[in-house]
Image (tube, rainbow, N blue to C red; front, side, top):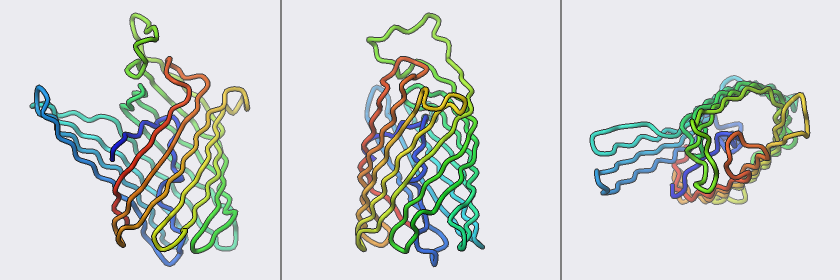
Length: 254
């Protein structure tokens, strides 16, 4: 992976594996990365992003995880990562499903020291075919965030002492996504996210967009181009309100 993801505020979970073909019971993606640099001390860095969806008796469980481990000289430390767990009960006769979820983030590069969120969406299966799907969801979630100043530009003034900022909030989240298998080789994935304070809707919105195009090199190996962004008009620390992320990667597909 050539660019690191730093999206702790909005996790683009609709990019995770979704089983479009109901004859398939397991689907997932693994994106490993290894890096070596001969600096003052040898730097060895391993990063792995993975997500899996399992379908069993009309139940769907999705687990996604990102882990970064680095070794600099004799010191080993863990940098940014996340864990996401989602459950969904699939009803063939109903287009709606409740999807409770939990997510945790740590050591994000923009300054998000840690985040916990738990909530549930009411998911609407607008269109569902073997090779395409349109999905929408809305629901409340509780959010806890702690930010530090590691991602603040040098041009900004950092308070002294630089005490981390913590915020708790109940938000209303929503999304809409479109997935299309263009051919045997190409898969297109588009999604839009919108979040706001549940007590002050349309007051301080937070939004995100994600688009992914995957080309299947083989049955299990793919080449993925991913673009994601987040817009937050009121970040807790003085960082850019609009953040972009571009990833070009090889992925192992199950």
